Image (cartoon, rainbow, N blue to C red; front, top):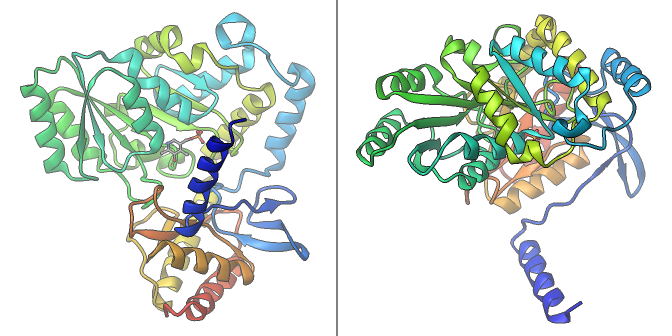
Length: 400
Ligand SMILES: *Cc1c(COP(=O)(O)O)cnc(C)c1O
């Protein structure tokens, strides 16, 4: 190995450390849940977990584990094939039909992750004659997916409908054949819900296609958890939904695109992350299938999640923290400075609360935060403990 190269890499790492941006992984000794066992220098500790995407608390659900275990015995451990060679089991098609039925689309296509689904979406559907108009705060995987396509790219300021309209006009003036608007359904760092009604109205007026990445919504937002299109009453006006099996729907892994039949059919022929990557493990497919069944009927868990969200928001606001406004279980506590966010996360860690500081490049410079996420896996005592810990930690780092 070239020593110059390694010392070049070491210098970059030192820079990340010096900027206070170095991320370290803590280890959980057990299942993902509301209370988790975390490995530390002094042994294992029980902590309240406020940073999982485990909104309905299904990650350690007994029925899902049973379904996954049964599939392990009946369908084996792995497929050792991409879908179109010999990697499609009855389970995979069942899961695709279940997703499509859940989201009210003709069909769905599975990927190893939603990162791959978003990487797969644009390139096969659009050419250099077409335009993609993307919200400026869209997830990294959308940004990468858009880059992989040859379509002309336009970006509108987050949630700014005037700006979106300007870009649609611009795309028309540039002679775009087809225009596609793409947005997160729930913005993962801010917890804001996309203005889908307005977006669909503009799409109608300018003849654009609408794609929504609903990773932070499917399963827990909207009627039966059918996501932001259901919540905002535009269900069938959103043409394409991408989503994940790695968050609310059991939290294992896997992504999907749900859309009308010709779109899904073409993606099966042309989407590179589908054609050139392994099929989902049978246990993951079976567990996710069970997770969808549970999520659809989980009004009780959605209500509990909503109660926790209101209580935690109120508690932190009363304590004097600055939160981004919103209604989703994503509750960002704004700190501004990356080092302060790290210190606050550390102070909370010492008080038995597991959170993560988010800072550049995950969020813009100067907008560092602790993003907390509510879960139906938490109970009322956990919320009380967390609010008290925040107040105490805030005082210890000097922001309250
Ligand atoms: C989590 C997330 C993804 C990636 O999903 P994976 O299945 O974990 O790859 C994509 N888009 C958004 C908006 C997300 O929040």
